[in-house]
Picture 1 (cartoon, one colour):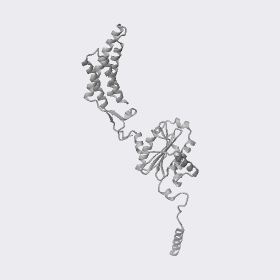
Picture 2 (cartoon, rainbow, N blue to C red):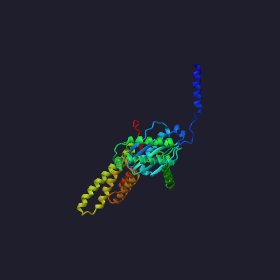
Picture 3 (cartoon, rainbow, N blue to C red):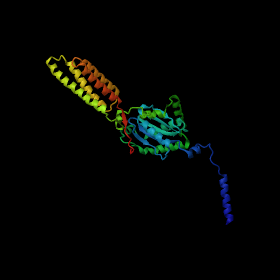
Length: 338
């Protein structure tokens, strides 16, 4: 019995000794096949509004990968501001994207993958997607990820590139390389992506469309005083304007321009109150224009008001302008549940 076991062990040992590992001359490198994925994430979005159409599923929790995916989604919301072919360099992971016929094809790849092969992957992804979905279906999509089943095609394409490090047809790779030589892709920085997201070190003024994320500082005591004085000036201008208008009808409209000046001053005072209470775009320009209108109107009405009355109206307008320009926006805390 022991002799039989010994013979079996000798035979197994000979088989193991005769086996040799595959060489690096094979079509696909075993190091690439076993150690890492070259293309970590793929994403398809509509250019018009950044609507996600499809994406690859992944189960990796790499911190840099999560950051690149977030930046990729940020880019997808402002694709109209970016060129049709571009790359964003990262520490170990790069972002590549290609836009064609209203659809953008994006990917996060390891930096050891050459740019030509990354763009070749995106071209293959574009051909696969256009073969499955027509422009009408893309344009009529109303909810995020309507073509999530396309993930199967993305996974097959990713596996092909991970196994062989590139496309199966060398002709495709050659064409892409020639195209990149003639028309090199734009190289973007991470700062460009942050600037597009409106987060350039907090120096960008939030857009009026994003009013749900910002609010004005609280109304101060000088602000309340300026509102009261502005309402008083507006009321005085309205009363004087209506009274002068009655006399103008009796005098064959000789003082019509004086009536216009009173009503312009009235409207400007009301708009100053609105500018102080609510945030609008180009606030500085609007505030300075209103101040100029009030000053010109009061100078024009010099015969109807004495110097002290003119100084009062102009001083109130100047105070309101200063408070409008110094009242800043205040960020609301982000909703952590989203």
